[in-house]
Length: 157
Image (cartoon, helix red, strand yellow):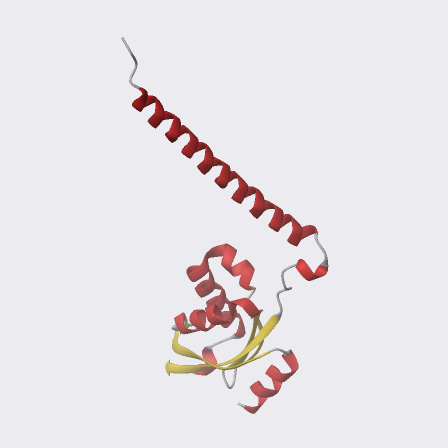
């Protein structure tokens, strides 16, 4: 009984296509690993840019309640809580939002963070609705690259 060559040819073709696909996948993974190793171990030019700090000046406006009841520790906790709510613990660690300055009498503050997280910090400030039992709105006014300029802007507000 003679064997039909068509199923054998189809099986051979399928095996060769599968082999080619697996070879391409392995090459891409290897290439990706080489790129990662070069950026980690290579010269300065091939390394990714070092994350820089940015400073955002913001103002807390009380909707209901007294702004004098809003303390620095409460603002820090609200920023931390909203950042962890949005981005989780890893995002909080990557963004590193830190309250640098807060004037309790005027409700003006300066928040430092990594430059790649600028838009995210705008979003997390918009999520702050209540601080220390006072309904508030956090309004970002400007973003700068130096702490000194941020402090000057905060003093003028």
